[in-house]
Amino acid sequence: MSMSESTNTLCGSCPSSENNNTAKFWCFDCLKPICTECRETHLGKFHSIISISEVDKMDKSVITGPCKCIIKCFQNSFLHCKSHDEIYCPLCTTEKHITCTEVQSIEKAAKGCQHSASVLVTDLERKLADWQENYLRLIEEQELNLTDLNFQKFLIKTKVSHFRKDMNEYLNELEDNIGNQLDRYYEQCRTQMTKHIETIQQRSNTLSSLESGLHLTTKHASECCTFIAAKNIDRIQCEEESFFETFQEALNIFKLSYSKGETVDDLKEVLKTFGEVKLEVKERNIIDSRQYRGIQDAVRIRTAAYRLHDYDSTEFDLGEDGRISNSCWNSKREILMVGNERAVWTYNIINKSKERINLSDFPEDVFAVDDKTFLVAMGKNGVSLVNTATKREQHILKSFSDCVAYQDDVIYTVDKKILILSHIHGSIMKIKSIGFHANSICVDSKGDVYVSDNQHICKLDSVNYRKEVVLAEKGNETCDIGGITIDKDNRLYYSDKTNGAIMRLDLNSKTAKVIIENLQNPLSIACDKTNNQILVITDRGSNIEIWQL
Image 1 (cartoon, rainbow, N blue to C red):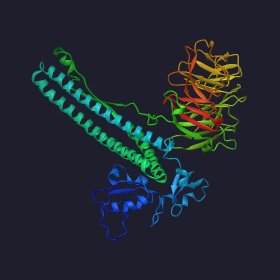
Image 2: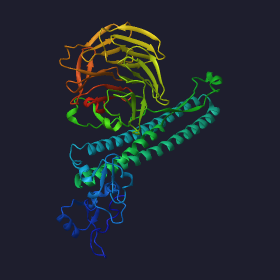
Image 3: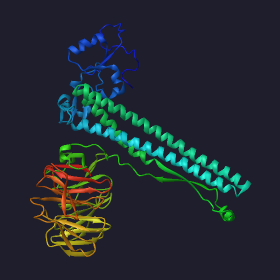
């Protein structure tokens, strides 16, 4: 609902009980409409005043605080709980936060949120714009499919009409039947798709309203008001993410077709199946709602890569040391992490759930096989396969293992200076000397293996595993390699710990290009090949960053 429901909104600030003054302005500090006379009083208090017509575009609820008191508290009396990331009133909504220790005043929490470098506001603006674009893409896709269906209907009817000339009365009746069936299918599709378009448009309009509200509060309101609005909008857009994922999975692409004959001589055979109209339903390509167009932290970006998430290791409850040494993804969008304890931690970036899976020994590396199992390299104790549901650990390789990878039912690991390939059940397939102690390994879709010892990178082809140096120790100047990984297009990346960058290595020219820079002590990296995102451990294991390539 807009803030001014009509042109006769009464002033909410006039002291008289017989208030007949029409509100012409809106006060962001008092969150109420005011008349021309009261405007001077509010300006004297240095309140932020705008025309009431300007606020018609925004949703009033996003700037409403959590206070349920009979006499509403001032915004600057609210508190912000960092543990729950919630704003609350210290008088009426304290139950949930009684034991919380990370509590601060809203003024402190909101400080700087209107600044151009504010991650909160810029991130929300980007996300709202991206959601709106995603919905517009769905509308465009559905409308295009509807146009194609209409053309397919016309084309089939035309072919049937031409064929009818040789079939006289029989085909005349058959044409009517086919036309009616086409119309029924088309109407069925049109009804369903029109309903989808209306739903998408409604969601898109809501996002426009939220975007306008965020812009107005950022420009005119106090930081407290902006912070409240931003948090409310952030909650709404999180709900939109859940809705978007579920909604788009229900969308289908429809196609009309029919079985036909070529000549009248084929009539007897053709008539067995002629006139059978088919409506094909196939799954559409899912839009990844996490692939945003926006660019964050421009100073850190040299190419098209941009940061999606930044997590502090303290969020994961990683034990006493609290640092991450290696990590990877699985298909459920879970981050798997190992550190300095006998355990693997999982964190789901969608629902923010986390779990600890205890191991028999200290892990050195981790690699997801699928959404239910993962491999862990455990040094002198070899390689184990772990089930995330049962938490059962199965020892499958006895060789020494500092790093591990998996591709097409094959396990790849390095025993000191020996590359070992084995089946998932542990039987050895191949052993190959590589001449140095590798501590990082990755495999592309062709089965080519890349290994690194922090100073150079070598490739072993999948045919005869001939070793080729693709990044020489002297060729990379002072680079200290933290980790290597492969993306969905078989492009090789490595982290440059010395220069704080992620590099993409051209395997033909053997030259490296900066993809992400100004990182703080980047260590291991891992690619999500489905979404083409890269996971980077930074700040000596204290942070995990997710970047879109």
